Image (tube, rainbow, N blue to C red; front, side, top):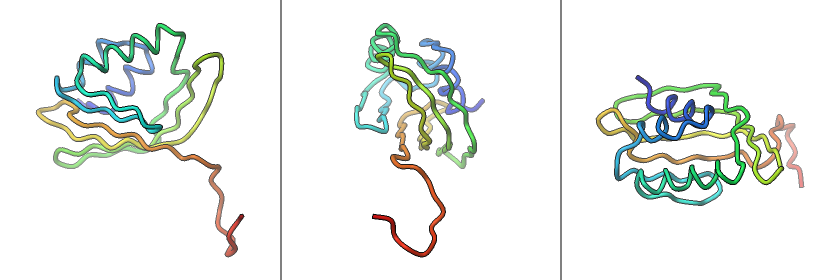
Length: 123
């Protein structure tokens, strides 16, 4: 069982009960652009609102992952559509686990195109 991969897979399938099953009742989920959801009930409300407004995860591919003790991490590429706009970006998730479920999850996003540094700073 890998709660973080199961969480991502649930989003990929738009499966609200699957996502909720990975979370502790008092979880905290922080999205990469700021919103914070406190508690499984609030995550459920968010998911229904987002999916109900036509939001969809088109692809969420984990490119690297690992865990140690009560900490799980994943790097990923996400493509999603909301309000008719599709966006793709890379990011990472750090999750704290408690008795096999996610108690705290925080996402980080790459906000600019990656490039190989050439010895000079771009302005």
